[in-house]
Image 1: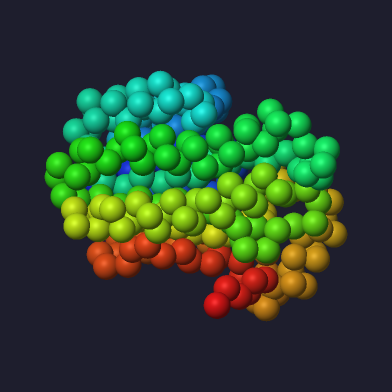
Image 2: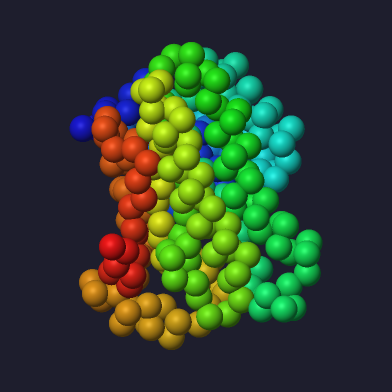
Length: 252
């Protein structure tokens, strides 16, 4: 089990912060994968890779990438191919929300949220697929959200629309690339606790989430990383979305 991903190359977006991307990188690394860390913050990315190299005793490629910039996405995929020759696992984790009632939302905010949450996934998928298709092998994991099904009450129209789009994109791409032995799935977390969010939301907000969950717990980044591991190591599931809300929403 300790080396189940040895020899695999994974690229994870928005991976140097405190959330799902960070936990997914660590989970993959622990099982032997060569992981490419991408994040918009160059300094944070370099530091995370330095920490990983000290812990695991092998190099990690860190790339500063603005996922809304097509040229930067293409360059990141190109640099990964140059270093490792391929991408076996792509995790599209980048997301951003700017809560605002739809009647007050500037067009620039709407476009920005869709670019980060949805268009960036298209950019990375499009860039990574030719090599996967040529090798007839690959796994793509898109991070959506429970907001794709049940929007929150405080101005999530753009975020919900983008995350619902991720689900449709996942199914459509899965259908297109299935004949090439490439699997495409999605994870739909609810709000997952991390140190950064703890600085934004009051403690009672997370207490309310615990009450809504049938498990009585708040989701952690490591919970979503374990789902990503399952999807990365499975060989059959495709075109599916795994609801990671702890029972806050039970999608039929």
